[in-house]
Length: 113
DNA sequence: ATTATGACCTATT
DNA sequence: CAATAGGCCATAA
Image (cartoon, rainbow, N blue to C red; front, top):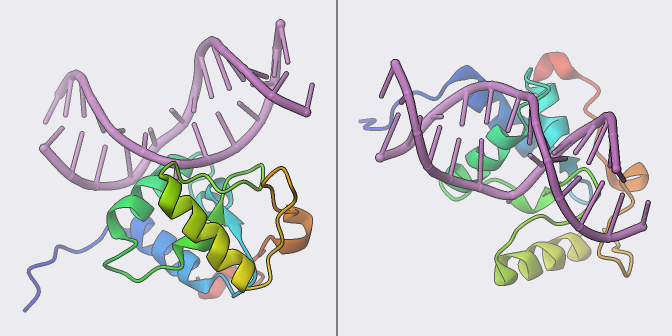
């Protein structure tokens, strides 16, 4: 049975929100935190992605920073993230940024999350 | 208890 | 436009 401890409510909401991001769309760290109920909690989202993206099979590549940039520092992971996004139809400008007006996912039915 | 961490965000220069 | 500074805050150790 479960040796895994129960996750905190905020953490669970963040996980649920990230799983809701559709193919071909992105959300920002701060946006996810805000929808999860902590408008200044962008760095929590970072930490959660670090510690749980594998175990929970999250679409981690659909999370970008507020400028529309891929924020991963590791070169290989960064390339992989851009590759995943491009394969879903997300286009990058030459400066490495995404047009958030076009690709940002804005959840409409917040009640369900 | 306290301190460190993290793929951030915003206002300011 | 780019760079910087300070704030941010839930978890892990």
